[in-house]
Amino acid sequence: MKDKKTFGSPLMHIITPIIIAAICLGTIIAASIKPYDKAKVYLHLAFMDDSKIDPANKNTGMTIRDNKIISGYSGETSDEGEVVRPKYAELYAEITSKALGITVPVYWGSDVELFERGACQATSSAVIGDKGNTVISAHVDTYFSDLGGLDVGDTVTLNTNYGEFTYTVREKIEFKSKDKSYIVPKKEDLLTLYTCKKDVFGSSDKRFGVVCELTERKFYVGEGAEN
Image (cartoon, rainbow, N blue to C red):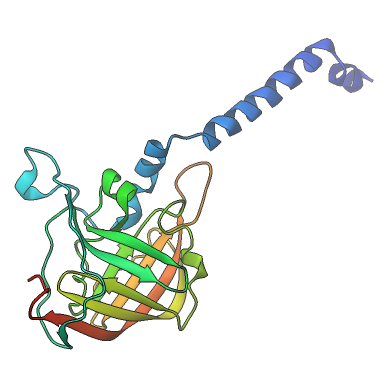
């Protein structure tokens, strides 16, 4: 009888609504995180990239270079050529996927502002068209929101100002943030695209994406190509 009186006491009737209101308020605040704060949460997407600022500009800040990327090149091409290593914060490529109907700009390096502008490539990974594993990430709620729609056999094209490179999806992947097995340098010529799984309460520990095999290299030759 004593427990029932305690449960139905005026004090419990007062405290219960306060607790419920506090829980609701916390949920609303978590769901209304500003885009800039979300960008900071997702910044560690490219956790292979330890360099956040171009060493050459460490005293003056980051310089973003928004280049115009060649598309629809109709000149001579070769399956052999030289890649051009970009400068930090330089827009140097575009990802195109017909399966998803998207074209996404690719910046070299990772920074809050760069993630707001497009996808970012880890500077420790292979330059597009070079030997090895090219690792690119983007926000799940912006540029890579449809990444889960890619299936094995779909193609992805990376256009640069020195060539066009086509990849075919080999496998869909899921891994935790501490698992670097998919994003480390490799001998195979691969493209790894990934993003975070959504989590309204903050940083997610889970990643998902695709691993693609390089199936065609087209280096630009002659007039119209930029070297």
